Image (cartoon, rainbow, N blue to C red; front, side, top):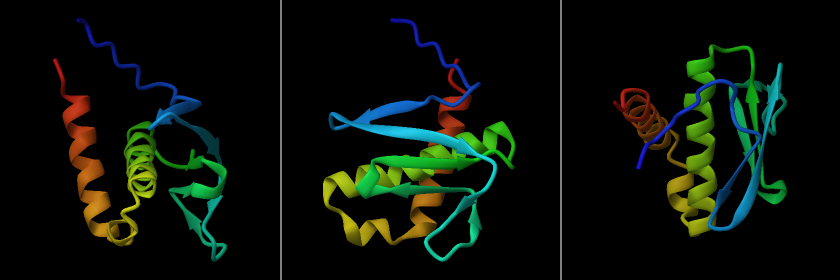
Length: 102
């Protein structure tokens, strides 16, 4: 099996447990408080928004971060979903692993 990774552009959709998640790239992404952020996951819309005001690598890290929120949502792990430090650390490590696969 050959693994081909395409890091540009970000995908427009992915599936988590059979649920389609839309991935939207926008110049400015706002959180629930109206603050500019790198990305958001909206569970009720199955939608992730990623800010294009960051490097492509950072967009990928942000996408993995938001996907982790989605996975936790679908697993019913709302307690873990609040641990931003854990989610950020995990998404950065996963990004590094994927980026360095040979």
